[in-house]
Image (cartoon, rainbow, N blue to C red):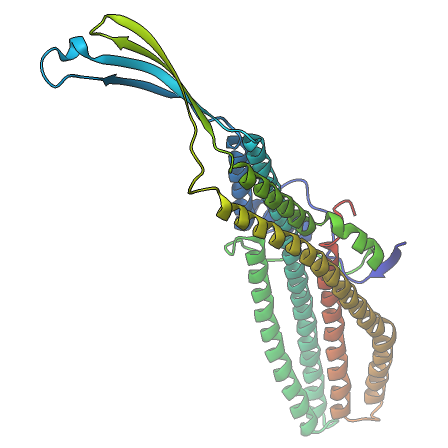
Length: 410
């Protein structure tokens, strides 16, 4: 059963079907993910490794090429060499038994499946990293706008207080206080601008090309999406690329063990030769078979190695399942905590803080409180606004982690 939650963060979306061009337009999350799909070198590496594995699978299981044989035998050391020599021409072909070829093909095919799932793991991880980096950059962008608004508010207040001081209606101390707050707000605004630019640079790096120019983000802070229960997410873990990769690797190691056992059976080489006895002017035909004797090398070491690798793969498979389950629980706990903090700030803290701020503004206008008290209330309000934006970022990042564990159809 799924719960429908309305969250104040607009950073989740489906992949864009078209690849966006690099422009100065505002970048959306869908476009950022599509760019990463096209530009990220980790995906290019994974695709190349997959093609290499497919090539090995195509090569495995093929019969070795036959050998052409041509030689001269029984050549005398003196006189009549060409008249008395024997000439041979023919071919030889090796054959492998015990199902070695089919087992080699199966092992490489399963290794290719491992590479495929590794590529999907990278793809999911990159999507999550882009999602989280986009959330951070969008948070920094909104935080910078909030800090800029706070600075403008103090500028306006400083202008008003200065006029009141000139008119004898306020103390110079009040003007000094508001000017101090104005200086502090400008420092925070400039710091916010620097952090915003850093976040945009980190987003470009997450996309896969630090040279990508990102000037603005297009993100909505109000969206509705579905959060699955822990049970439904746990059900999806069996289809997670990490689990499928571990399973494919387990099967591939088992197949290599069977291949190592089959390689203990010697291969047989068949020869068919035409022989010309020049001295007797006769044509003959030779047929032969050669089989290596497994006296010194019985492939025991390779079998032992393959058996140990198979056991290790089985352990990795179980460890991967445990890790995914633990990660799902941690992600849900983190998302639940982030949602609780966001909800408390939005529904309980901010409405009361706004009431306090509006009351303080009215009392200051009426002359009931001094500017120092009003500034304290304004600072508290500004801090809560930034806390709320931070909670939105935390929700988005936690959701990105949860989403990376879900089945793609969701």
